[in-house]
Length: 187
Image 1 (tube, rainbow, N blue to C red):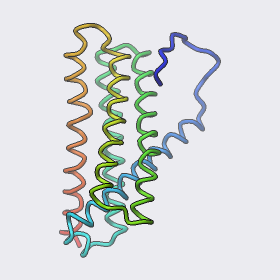
Image 2 (cartoon, rainbow, N blue to C red; image 1 turned 180 degrees about the horizontal axis):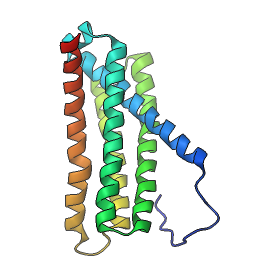
Image 3 (cartoon, rainbow, N blue to C red; image 1 turned 45 degrees about the vertical axis):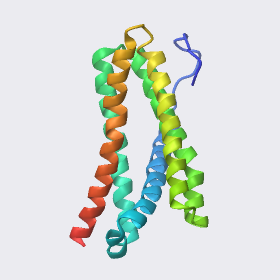
């Protein structure tokens, strides 16, 4: 992740099974985020939690996360293909998928602690926020090292990161709240 590779091909071609594994782990990340947001719904949207089936809440939150990650991958691919060359775009896509997968793996233990040991809500939120912040900082480093290593690149980096990373996180949170309230209206 931190090493800058210069080689074009060192006998390492992508296998189809690797892509299937990545899709499965992205789905696992979405499911873990949905389980964590389920606890947020339980604490902050009590009326939704009491009136809607928990399976519907988990399903809707998982679907919202899947749409979120699919849209972000599409947006990154479009924006990167407009401004940067194909090799950089491919390197960034690999790094971005690695960050998504690492986030899913890192959020799995707090989700288990929440489910099985009823971890304190405040503690859980701080742990999740810290893990997401570390993930975003690693992604920030990777964006800088791949695309914007020039001195004026910091301006681009700030705009790029805020537009395609920070704002979508806030949109994801609001979309999940809206989706849960929508479940309440159709129930």
